Image 1 (cartoon, rainbow, N blue to C red):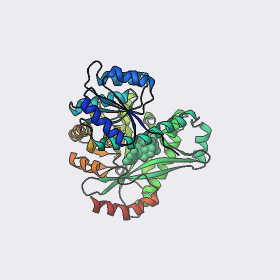
Image 2 (cartoon, helix red, strand yellow):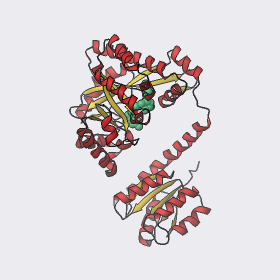
Image 3 (cartoon, rainbow, N blue to C red):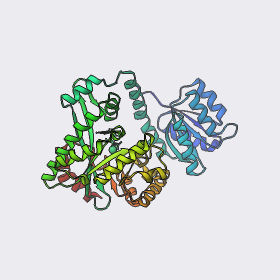
Image 4 (cartoon, protein in one colour):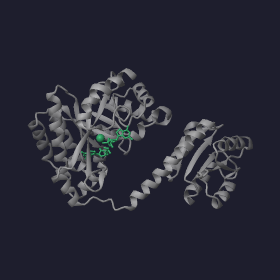
Length: 403
Ligand code: G
Ligand code: G
Ligand code: MN
């Protein structure tokens, strides 16, 4: 079987730079075209299917920024690589703009481009294209979750929990675990929690789902305690649950009824609670704090809460979303965001937890930035309670000696 050759377009007004890039692309076995300004590039793209465009930002007639915008508007190419001799922050802003317009930015790089950058980009492209296709394929299926299916999941005990460790940056101590809901549907297989939690909210079953899951988590917590394992347990809570005034008392009773102290439980909520009835949410969160529960602001960095709004939530922890964590070791822009967020958190007396840590490089960068705790695939995926025990005994020790 012959593999389809990738088609690459190099757009650069400098003949020397363009030839250099064309040569490097040809060395990968691709079929390479070139254009020397934006107009030429558009003319070619309108007649020729191209897989990847390498685009220089500074060009006469039509600059790279306009060209990218036009490419997005007409959906002429999906994958682009942005090149410039200007400063990194400009290149990276244009990258964000391109992504916001729906393009896949394989990389943003300073000129002259190197063979390494090109091979890494091209290695990413197949999987990215495949995941686009997958996303589309699942979108056409009817993937909604019905009331009846959810009710069956609750009654037939199809819902269960996985636990993901949270470690301190200093000393890599097991500080706690986050409980994450899982559902394996008898016919449909794995259904992700974002989907069924949302469905539960829509079908007014979220209260029941939360009770079922918290009950399992607390029983598990008690078993760990009885074995002498005293780490904290983080539970995700839908903002909807904060609308009921009896919630705090029933949670407190529920927790102590299981022999667990509120101070050993962290309630994770997203900053989206600020979008609802703020006064009511703040009242309930304050009462949770008074009862001794810890409160974490989850997915921080995805919403738009400002420092003033953040300071009003009686939280104890700020959880930095993986979208600002993943890959930060190599991304100065993300490091700057995390750096300022960590400072803000310190001023507000909040501990910081970075989630989505997938590599040693990112972990070390986070240690350097003064983040308190970390969570992510680099340390462990979310796993069942039994696997967690063996993880503590085996993998955690290995991690400590590697870091
Ligand atoms: O576990 P990830 O594996 O896919 O979780 C996806 C999302 O689902 C996360 O944002 C997480 O906060 C949310 N989630 C997971 N478990 C629960 C739960 O028990 N309750 C609520 N409300 N959200 C949950
Ligand atoms: O509640 P929250 O939105 O924080 O849920 C955490 C989500 O992140 C869960 O879906 C969990 O499975 C996922 N997750 C945990 N660690 C990693 C990681 O290192 N990389 C990625 N991509 N996802 C992670
Ligand atoms: Mn969470």
